Image (tube, rainbow, N blue to C red; front, side, top):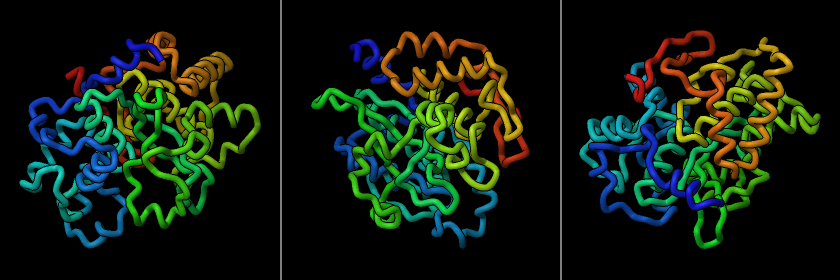
Length: 300
């Protein structure tokens, strides 16, 4: 791992930069366990049972489309004067998902100048009624003491650890338990695993979901950590999509590079492809069939 690559991930992207809200990140604990706890105190999953009785839940679902950490912190401040290190009740947390936990943790680590990045993939350790590999997003940080990247699942509290039957520390997720999207693509292309083992729910499964997550993972490795529901280029496809031979070859190369994720020059170069790089405007899918055009913050 080159010093240049580590320095790249040590600094903020426009998504993780807290900007004028950086004051909220002052005097926070520095240990990883506490930072994960802070993420859980700030964000609650949109399917969490604690939200079922909220009278304004439908309106608050819009919070799921909060892309950048600065806006996350602004919304959290408007809900309560509680500092990030203090517990807050579920109704005062930001409604989001695993991507938001990973992105906030990534920001907290970069704020302490620890190299970190967001990874899109699939987790075999999450118990799911339909899929062996349900979709998931984690944070990855550089552990200088051992000289390697480690995966962290900030979302796993004691309740989830028990319900998922975790037999490992979520602060160090084994590589064979979280399959980055590039590996998932390779597993399906090689016939190791059925594509229908990967998905979110219902028809949101299979190779088209893997491809979308793969394009997201490439963008995140280039420090463009967008929402799962933000789609563009080769990420903006559906279950009936059929790639051309040239597109499959391109995705094969993306899978190879992101699965290894240690060739920064090649990752940057292939990201510049017009079907892979995030454009000025993307489609944000508010549900499976409906999208709205969104002008991205760094382009506005």
